[in-house]
Image (cartoon, rainbow, N blue to C red; front, side):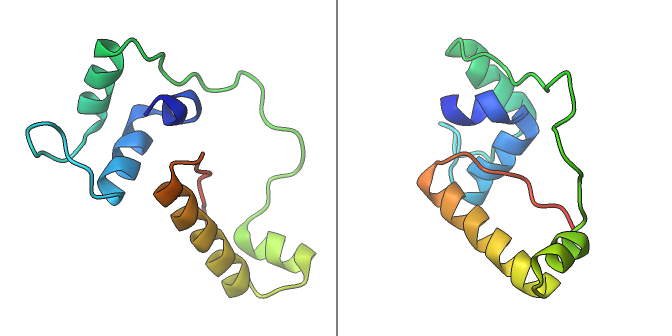
Length: 98
């Protein structure tokens, strides 16, 4: 959770933990409130969104696929595979939006 808290808000962390099949100490699913409570208890700082937008142009899935010269379905499959591998290994997870 420490690694995720640096990069993601509590609701996203709850989704990742639930997606991994993890449960709270009382065998409940994680929620943003439960993640926030755990963070406060363990003195883990909360996520702070960047004050400036990222550099570069934001693209839709189709726009990125067009620039790379691949089908949108290929790019989506690659992104979802990377997402799954990252969530299973505990690495930083990047959101995928279509």
